Image 1: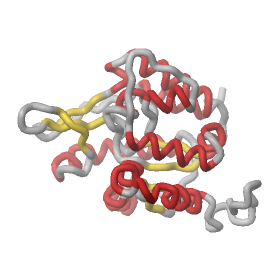
Image 2: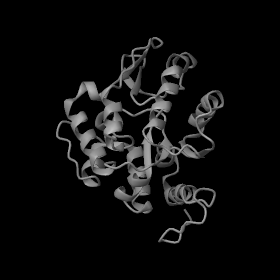
Image 3: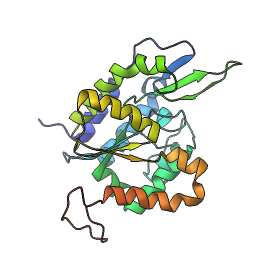
Length: 244
């Protein structure tokens, strides 16, 4: 029996585990192991939006933040958006993630969650949260590329993860990489592994929300223009006038 896209993503998340050695001061947070409700809301989300066998386009993030997918298990989705937009409440946690705010405004501009998730899949080459310990013992978000030793420690896991993402049913002719520094590293991996034909780079939602919030509409337009560019599926007209 053929698995749906949702079933494949849920199975992928159920087996997610990183057992490699990290440089001193770094750690990995696996929300699927830390909170049983994360697994429940994650399954509800994918069953709602991905219960089909349709191919989707790929948005590549960095790695989950502690207040977004690091809690909900759903990329760029905090508990606020999970409930208010997706209709899936999470009782054991309440989080606000600035990246989630931009992403869901962009999704609304695209045509809403059902339409967007019907066309796109968002995830990361390192799909678990990474944290680092600051002086004084406080733990904060970290990116996989923050330290050369950290990147080398997770590189093979990232390559393997990207290959597993592709097998879910992704279009590899063009992928959208969120964040310019992220794109530098994804491009490096892609040069070695030849995973994607074209990488289109977009500013990361957190950067936009934190440093360019007054220009947010311009960046939303940039995202939509990239998604509906004539270079992809040329000749097919979108009902709203965009070329798709």
